[in-house]
Image (cartoon, rainbow, N blue to C red; front, top):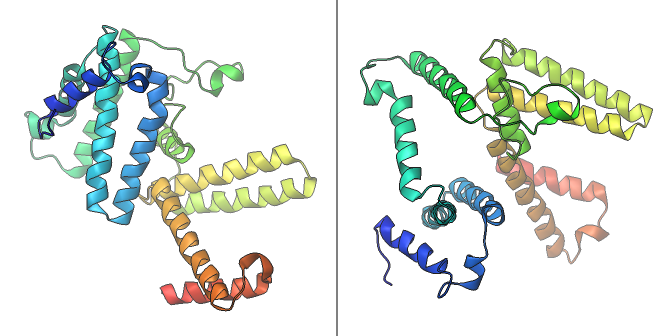
Length: 279
């Protein structure tokens, strides 16, 4: 087989890998469940390439992610469920349906009208999906004896925590359950921080965990209100921490020292120097 720009070649390669006789032993034994972790990993690697601004890596990672889509579609086709063509048709139908201002008659809409239309269309889609294929939510509502939330039931429980928090909050906001402005959320964060202090004083580890979760949830809500992706924000914070800690390591190494053998005060001094140099 030769490389190609045609998606058909990728489909053919995956079919060959999955062939029960001549295919790859590893690829043949994969299932929906076993491929999911790789799919999630590839999505994060796409995000990482974007964050680093490396377009060569982005091109490669997008290909890896596309491979996982084709691979999952092939497994589904072998089971008589659907194929890659069905996946493409489904997403094209959805994009056309959700963009009547581009693909239909609803032209000249303002950004606010487009957002409202998008929300209405998604609400209709959720209702139709529930009617055609109802599923029992596996969210915490079942565990605490409450019925699953009608509005929140289809927010995937497998999403990263911060991302799922944003989706839950945004969904609740569609029915008016939301803070009125970012400063109200900031006030809530301060209140939750005080509750962490009280939990620490009590020595109750369960309460500490609960209150830290509340702070994270509130901080995510603040990010949503100011149009900041909390996952992107935490990745930037992680990168900043790594960058500044590398500076500490470099400066200590220059003096023949290691971080573990240096006093915290000296490392904090180097941290602040690194922070100042970034400004």
